[in-house]
Length: 384
Ligand code: ADP
Ligand code: GN1
Ligand code: MG
Image (tube, helix red, strand yellow):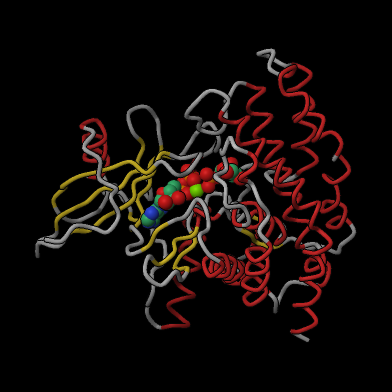
């Protein structure tokens, strides 16, 4: 029996036990042979479980514990995820007549529900494991950037006819940058752990850019930027990329799919795909805004979303990259000052380190924004 290409299995007995206990409550077939933890996301707890089928082959599944601190109502999250996965699967099936590539599917619990609740009240779900693919925390080449952007544009297209009123808001005001800014002001005023003094430069950097936080909200209020059903968490490790061909196969992490601006999705791609440095890199000289990556994102996104997004949206593509990077910088700094209550952290000052890379990237985008806008204009002219 051949091993799987990605080394996900860890021999931690606690993880093995956990996955075995959770796994048997879902309608997955076969005998449990092992489990492992995946620690790339900042929010949920994600595990993989491998099961031997009657014919001897191995099949993997994802078991995920929804973060209840972040998602106050996990059943609302499950409602949306069920709606979205069903919509996409029905549509792909109608158009392609088979599920050809791979799409994300929920496996129900043996009880018939789409989730299980553990003894501690934790809500778990089970997905098919998207095989043959990897996720990248850092993009390696422009092909991956192009593919990821095209995949998120296609995703927006796929959910464009999903009745937004049937989706619930899983995190209120998720991308309301102005409210994120105001929340930072409140947390800084309270300064519960006395951390503000040491982060004055970062705090001041953000305050100097307060005027940016309302730009897209104003565009929305003026009717220039339409609300659409969007993904809202398009960081690069939320798209599964074929390990051999670098083709984007499937968009994952659907917990924040809800009405939003297309620009939030494009902006987060810029944030996570243009720099060769890790989000928590402490050597800030490694943070870069790589123009070829930005160009590939624009091309990939316009290839799939260009037919439905409007002129005002296109005009703000580069700006959205800057804004979402600033927004996530604001969120990391807020969490640092508040005492690391939201994002998972793995070392002291982890959120502060993350904040610093974001603010550095904002600065680099500012320095090249005119060039970025010129590229967008060039592509737009070419497509007319
Ligand atoms: P979080 O909300 O914590 O970011 P994700 O849903 O993004 O959780 O999952 C974390 C990681 O687990 C992803 O970046 C990806 O590497 C892996 N993963 C999640 N779902 C799947 C899946 N269906 N198939 C394969 N890997 C997955
Ligand atoms: C979180 O879940 P994950 O790791 O894909 C966060 C995003 C942030 C991102 C920063 C629900 O994304 O909003 O942009 O971290 N997700 C949630 O890396 O808050
Ligand atoms: Mg994720």
